Amino acid sequence: MTVKQAAKIWNISERRIINLIKDNRIPGSFKNGMYWNIPCNAHKPFDKRTKINKNLNDKKIVVIAGINSDIGKSLTQILLNAGYRIIGLYQQNSNIDSFFHQKDISLKEVNYFKRANLIKTVNEINEDIFGFVFMEIYFNLEDNLDFDYDKFEKSYQVNVFAANLLVRELVKKMNYESSIVMVNSIEAYRGSFGASAYASAQAAKVNLVQTYANIFTEMYGIRINSVMAGWIGGVMENDDAFNKAKDSIPMKRLGNPEEIADDIFLMLTRHKYTNGSSLISDGGYLSMDSQSKTEDLDSGKFYKILNKYFTEAKKDSQMWIISTMMENEWNEDPAERQFIQSNFDAAERGVKIKRIFIFDQKDSLKYKSNPYLKRYLKSNKIISNFVDLKELKRTKPELLDIIKNGWIGIDNYALLVDLPSDGTSRGYVTMNKLEIAKAKKCFQELEEIEQPLKNII
Image (cartoon, rainbow, N blue to C red; front, side, top):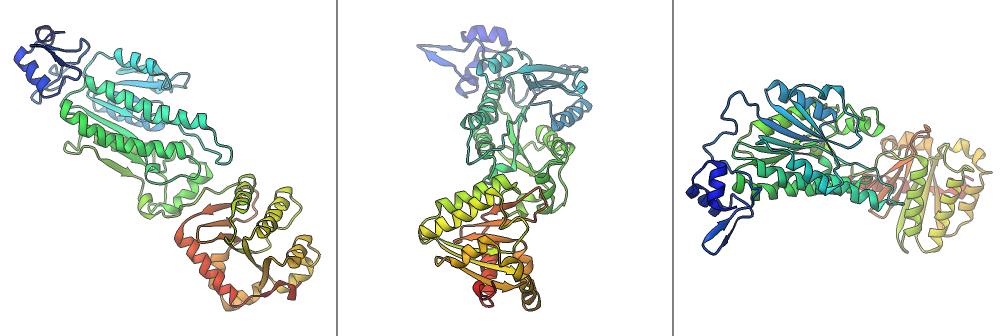
């Protein structure tokens, strides 16, 4: 459309429109000869003197993508109490809580995996928008030994591509007062053992928020920030990983959806000079957690990782191993047999393996008939030594807290840690440099009091 047509539709002067074009506040406009051309679907830019709702009876609108979550429910209640109207987007075929079927909430079913569907939904929103909150997530726990590339791509489709499209289209309906909040995860700041797609997508969103602030603040006057959520209870609080995470949180508890919702509301409606920033809401987790470890793994996953490390270990790699003769060690389990064989295969390839067995010397008789220990004794490529548990308790008891149930050290790179045989978890993998260094020092101290296993068995 022409400047004259736009002036009539928007009820502002032609001179004002030309100034807006020159300020790059009407995207898509271009000059053809002596005349300006403006996209017919362009949204009227508001100047900094204009408020969204001149009519005090009109409620400001906030669009929430991913409304059907515990955080979404809490945020919706806060916004309704503050006098806002909500347009809620939710994935097709998702269950919607009856709470959302009330006055001042309009629900729109969308398909975050389909670009055309999202654009259609955006085009159906004709009102001026005060705020937009993107909190939809796609999370998939990955099997790194049998990786699903389709699910990796799906994660980006929702967490990044859909977020990008909705921000870029909805911002056209915003103005100087408007604000956008991207709900993100502290996974963005750490690598992930089991959810690389999710973690890397969150990192991409951090950069996008900063980029949007560079572009859209100047064009539309909007603010955009993100809230980085930590371990939040309510959905998976009975999950072992969530419960164990409490130990790494200075506040010693999971966050709750209401707390994150409150942070989003403040970012959306307050903090008027905050732009392109990320608010970390994690109870102090990022400040304190330096574990760099996997979650506790069941036997199947743990043995897969064990065999992978032993199979891929290069010649001259060093493995320093503590065996405490747990009940789930040295038995007839097929996975255990395969793992023991991988020890000897690695040694044949030139991997330097030293294993220190720790048990009470008075129990040595019951181990004399163990076929696997006999095999270790016969090997001339694996060093097998012994430390008496009773003597260790008397002379170096502080080492027991480090040894615990035993572990496998691989160079200075990784530590594969055994867990008690409680039937739920078999072990975990850590690459934490402090934990590895502590274990290595412990191993060296044990070497000072070790003796050949053959002297005992």
